[in-house]
Image (cartoon, rainbow, N blue to C red; front, top):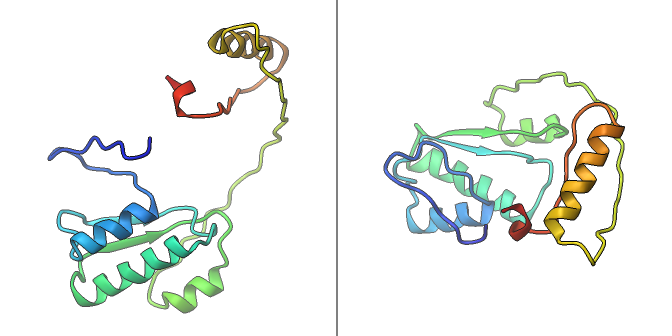
Length: 143
């Protein structure tokens, strides 16, 4: 959730946005206590992601040669990234695609939201084989 943070001295992994990373770099350019930064879904290029990578490369070359960077993407253009990071090893992994069917079921306004979602999930699990992934409209509905 936006602005929610549950970090302590025991935290080993912190998931943040590129914008939060940029603010962290502004407050502590050395990223004290951070040993690895993972930029995932890097093919979804944005100003924030590009700025984050540029700042991280600057920190790595000038302040923290021990800072490790991992840039990940399922569909990244390897040639562009190789030209930007010529010394970085490129690891490729072949994946598999699985058939996915999408179903849209509008919520009935006369039933409580949780009851409607549970009813629809039960119906789909009895009618379909495989797994079920439900997308809810917001974070409040996930609790």
